[in-house]
Length: 466
Image (cartoon, rainbow, N blue to C red; front, side, top):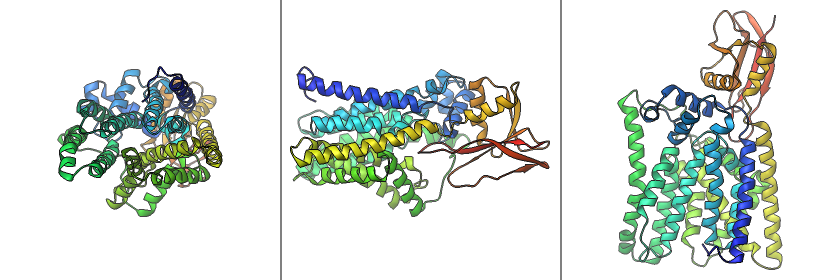
């Protein structure tokens, strides 16, 4: 990175700071509303286990993103949702600066555009404003990326900061284990970069310490998490979908769509990414890495037929690669004079507009805010009430939302006699019953919300018909 004491560099980083501040505002706005399904269970487990040690020893579930769970335990299950999401909001905002530092290696304009894209990306606004481990993991992954790329500039002359890499890897893996996908991309790209500039024996000698720094701590964390689970009741998964090429394609398409905000913006971003990947006579380590993230990680999930490959968040690393390539391609064009400059400007306006439109929808939807169900029951039964849930998974959603609203709520399984209210949640296109019947009592809808974006579950609240 160029020296900050130069006027041009100061102006650049002031602009990047302004984009980061805007990204922070978007994440705060998107962080409103009660916790949705995965967040609520994270908060419930954090509260139930009681101690930081218990986070590691007693929650043997893939919903346990350890750093996030520790944060939720620290602030409490009854803390305001914005406080519970603060770890993700802050780390998601910090990622804007790190992305700009990485892209700065390609020039001032790529750095500025990386900051803009990382600030407004609906994908990053979503994951950077929910009480989950994806935002801290992405920050750690970007830090590892920056350290490795700086070392690859002169691997025979510069020392490898293995300790810094190892610390970032441990923290990132404790935030979310899918960081391993990004580490694999870094390893592949670093190996390719070394082989392009030196004989294979020298590349092997230079690359082995890097591989150890990347994978020794990562595999150590995986062994710790799975080992503790195996020593008790076994490591549990909330849901494992059998691999399907169709589901894989749908999950990837949805993630990429929300990376930039819609099909038109996605087409423009892909065009800029292709330009970035093909404009160099000799590819830089940076571009090789971004291409590997964008292409190789999703293809790896396809080839390995990875379970849950249809979940958009499993393709998150691919979305990061696309944003970086679009920033490099757009920034390179924007720095030119004439038609190329204006073409780049039109592309960036298109992407930004698409992203902000999607951001607005995400902010207004609030992940199908479950607190609306609590409010509906409060209006009809101010002193408290009982609600039945169709599926056990909704228990934590309602309990945490009621706790935050300080509303007395008894949550029951569907049993007789029927509770006054019935809460039903759904995923995807699963239909809701028009007037469900329990214990001979019919229910009518009194509140509902449909999730939009990458997170949230659809739900309907019913009340018994007298």
